Amino acid sequence: MYWTILGFRIVQPPSYTRIMAAGKQRKLLDPGSRAPDFRLPGLEGGTVALQEILANGPAVIAFFKTTCPVCQLTLPYLERIHKGGTLPVYAISQDDAEDTREFNRQFGVTFPTLLDTGRSGYPVSDAFGISSVPTTFVVERDGGISRVIEGWSKREIEWLGGLAGVEAIRRGDNVPEWKPG
Image 1 (cartoon, rainbow, N blue to C red):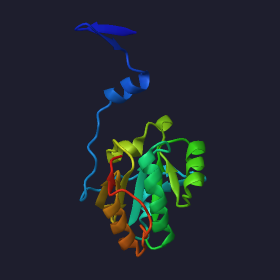
Image 2 (spheres, rainbow, N blue to C red; image 1 turned 180 degrees about the vertical axis):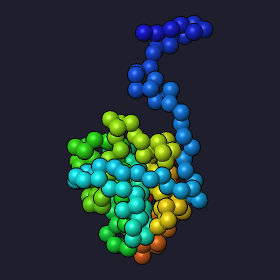
Image 3 (tube, one colour; image 1 turned 120 degrees about the vertical axis):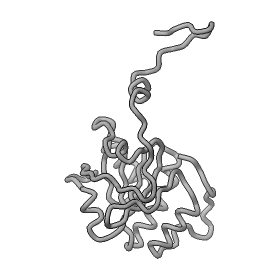
């Protein structure tokens, strides 16, 4: 289906685009905001709630898609932070379990991964106001958001590494200073 407007042929967008454009875009949560409570299915079974993630202190929560090149750059560095053991890292995938499992295998991600898929309507992504990935939050034990990182930022990854007592970016790592999500 198409329309002609001012002599230009306008093609009707695919249904996904119409549905997404029709939804109201929520504003990305800022530092100082409270993280919305959630419970999501885990990639390896069961469910995990925000309260459980924060039970022992602050945590990093990173939203991603498996096909996102900037996510493919970012998550292996979050894995280094996770391996340090002092700052829990959780990923929230916007893809199905099969694609997410393959992504984790390919990029060496071992930290807990939760699923917030299109099939479920992306309820947690929407509650956090996610419009691009990766978007990473540091959430304090009380549920307050203390840091928000959109896309890739070498400086922010180094800061997260420092928070965890880990050298996240090592000598010889050839990474850009910044990449948008």
